[in-house]
Length: 327
Image (tube, rainbow, N blue to C red; front, side, top):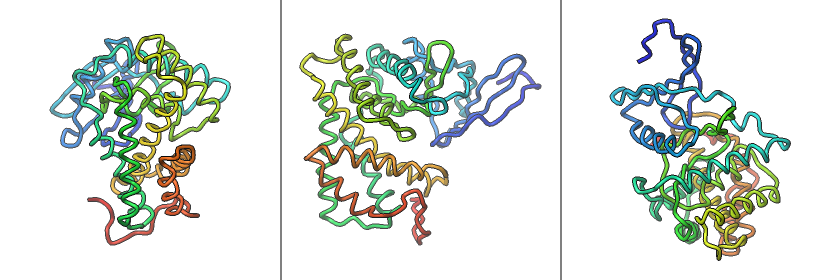
């Protein structure tokens, strides 16, 4: 694939899936080699969605060669400076401004005809990871019938809120670890292969209520309102969707995402042996507490989780059990 026996490889990164990335030093430039084992990863979606995004003028890696059989993709190198590495209060407005401009291009310029829908079963299925992996595996708690009733009511309300929103291209992981600072057409966007057709506020919540970095609520709401105004000007959002309604959508889809993430981060640790995710659980749970405290219809969910967590240190792994959670 490289056609150069002098090329040198170094590990660039590994993500939460089975994919691995290598930086290739070849002649006077660097490239990125993605290794996605075919038995575990389908690079077809990555290639198809990347091509759509590239055609829309978004800054995604340029594909130079691909080997579908072996799950290999050779691509251009967007650099190694992630948003998470450089964000601070002095540059946040500029960096988030660039990210929201790119997000607006995704939502207004990309058709969703070929994307699977982010439907009720998918939304609820994601949230159901939480009681299994977070409550059960991480906290060691069995969920009784009354607790399941609380969870089911909350999950269905969150799904209903998502489904009443305008449907757009949803990246699904549009956050500081998947955005790269680039000199031209900032930001570089990666990890887009899971895109679906879904709610307009999902990627905005992923960006502004990031699991890896948190901002003051007033600042976040200022960015949210700025984005809403832009959507109205683009014609993607009806005039009757006022700031209150849009924030309601934003809060609820962010809560859906964070409930899911509580389960995913625990699953990554216990099933996939990927260290480093448990330390973010307190921030994720804090987002959950904030939103449920402001939403009377979801107060019971917040109280259930507060009782379940108590004074536990969420960043510490659970004690080994007979069931290691790998099923």
